[in-house]
Image 1: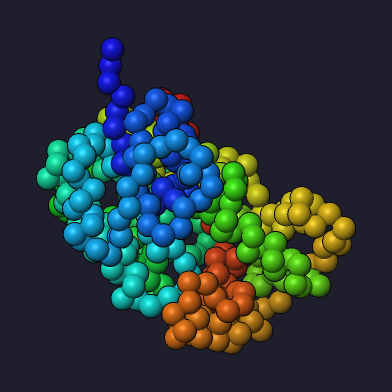
Image 2: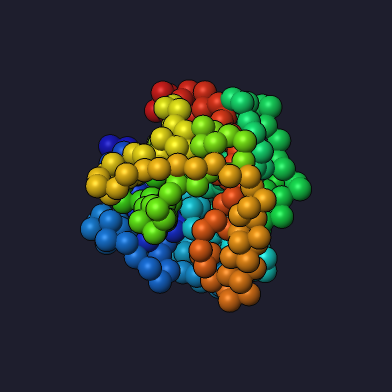
Length: 317
């Protein structure tokens, strides 16, 4: 009988991590989830093993490897569009380096890093593949900034066969605690749906269902062709920003009439700046109000990538 692959999944108590734990267990993996403070009900009910550790505490990360793992799926991160640079560096770069080095020291077969499509920058795209996409080193937001640095560190310090990078777009579905509740809260509080910039809500809103994220993580762990490669995770259905708001309203606010209006970006940019600066000064994990400057960039561009590599990888597992 073949032994079950033993997999460490970091961030297992969170939204994406708890979904990944369920998915990997369904594939027959022996899963240990690294948790910190918050633990979702999904993970608590999964039956997976659990170990507590702090991303920003090197000693506790070292304690993770008292168990021998076949694979490490690194999902845990500071994920926000506001916040202090130093905190992102610690959680999203220094911790990645330390965890990946520990994985190599303990002969893990592959380290799979959950990155973000934001590493490509926030401007208009038109179906580019990973072979034609480049990192946007001009980004100022610390979230993509340190995802880029981590991605590059892995390429520089690990042999290609030992790592893979998964770059999801806007993750949703299966108990979403991130984008869906934030958008629904906006719809509840605003009498109008505001679109800013030239796209008028017809730009692609790049949704990546969490199940597709989990499937791609699993493929990145196992497939020979995933070695040293990055892959964008994006649903095949083309959904505009306007369609996204309408679907959310139909599901969560069925009595609400959606009225849309388009305005130039300059009309909202001062408020977005205030939201971002104040949230950072107060060390908040989320903006005081929407949009933040980074969210404004996101909703005003056509984030349309190719998902051909994702589909190819998924088809092979």
